[in-house]
Image (cartoon, rainbow, N blue to C red):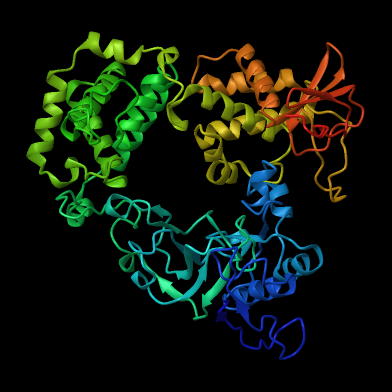
Length: 556
């Protein structure tokens, strides 16, 4: 027997009739875990659920449509970057969103937190995945939505300015997240793959959220573990003296050093950030899950000391730079990647001096040479994104293709560096990026080399302001090789092979303009150049504008 579980109140702004509730009575469904689902809710009712939620917000946000299957924002399905010109064009307002639900049966929409361009810069969301460990009464009462799965909840708050993105850690691991910037939630009225529909369950006004209202373990750079005895002393964290000039010098030399020792650089950087690094398991404590913090500190200080000695600094100055750089990272990232508090913060000056003195005394030039000269060929394929050289190569290819194809034509280098570069899995300085952007622009303006195809197809929506550009594959590889000068190790041939692999994976397309002479590479979501002889995509040769044929019935 079905049970009445929800009744909406008449809505003064109801687009379906003044005073007429768009949802009268919703009943439980034997097929779905969410009591509000596709079996008892019309598209008009779903549109009302969306408007009902948006009317509670203090802003008029822009929404990102979900993919056709409703699993993720459409930008992910199309491999479009959020802050790109194409990504911005996909954003719609409330009126258009409700129209699409009613008239087109749109699956739903995503709302990104902390995005000024989306008019959501003051919104922050709390996602409750484990309602037992992270109950709704943990945070202030506010506007609350139940997931389409019927099992999770998200709350919407006003950010007081202190709240940042964070995942649960320690005993809060897996309970949910705080989503404050560039992180989305799915809006009410959207259809979950299970058939359930996201809907508001608590229609309160938005409360303001601040860090002091969030439990330990869900605040950025904090760790919660009952009885762990491993917490940062906040007063000591604030008092941790760091000389900005010394840190700047130390960072500059480390960036110079990395160009010749990429693998060792990433290993050291991971340890500075609180990790084990890439080489072996020597920092494990009894080969368990915890990192040997004492040995990690000594290892970092020893290698930093060796780097600064290589640059000609005295023993005392090298120790000072190493001391300052570890202090800087400890202040910025006070917890290890396994959740332990860094010893460096909670120990006194005498302890720190002993650590740096030990590191300098046990420094061995032969051991250091072996460390810095470890070949990137010895790295495993299972390393994380920011430590795997092949992923750096892929990221460079994708970035240079986007840059040369005009994806960031309307963005300043500073904006690209701040908001887009992290997505590609490698890092260069702002000045290096400016030089790269300037080089690409110079070559295009002066036509020193045929970077762009003059046969440009119209954009999908007919907009003539944003034309698709088609750089030569050979030029993309050459620019990648110049960019790789920061890292070293890859030749033009390596990038040629990487571009071909990205084409086979469906990340890029390749167009043949003249067999054996002129090949163009461009993002997969671009229109094909109209005068190409053939297009290659996912390993299949196509005619310009042709889609990959659907497999025949029964074909795998």
